[in-house]
Image 1 (cartoon, helix red, strand yellow):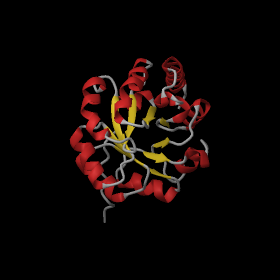
Image 2: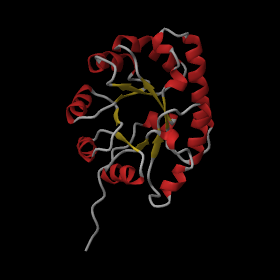
Image 3: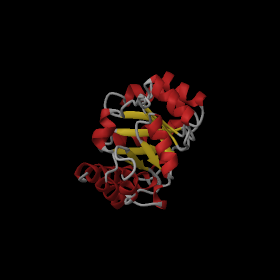
Image 4: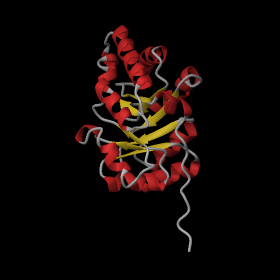
Length: 219
């Protein structure tokens, strides 16, 4: 009697894996993306999650892919329905992220060859997504557990690939990557007030600091 076949598992995009840093861009309006993404790309950011909580993100995505897609991975985040997933696939997103544990979304994404990073916190939630074919699993909210959680998960699930999200600051990024996270997902601690008219030079300095830490962190 043979065991279950291994699930299809689309790999995360190479630039995301190489940079080990996903920046979560949650803007007030899709038209606000460009000025911030310009600075992020110039600072060396190579993976950006555009969230569906920003109105008209899907409408803006073709323009952003044309402008930045040759140098950075653009994912769609806050995907919570099969309709959202289908639109992300059709629009050419490089990956999708969801804050929830949904076997249906994971299977549909994997079957379509779309890298997906679903959220969860408990071992049951995270393993459910991983065993279903997730490209990696998002520990959310990461601040509730801490970097030591990677070792805890790797005990029963030695191959699981994790991406912490939620309150990950510069020191946290270093700690999570050193603990074995495949990447970190960062929002407010890097973006600050950039989407509210904040100083773009300060944004670039913060982004450069995160890029440097993620490049230097030892797995």
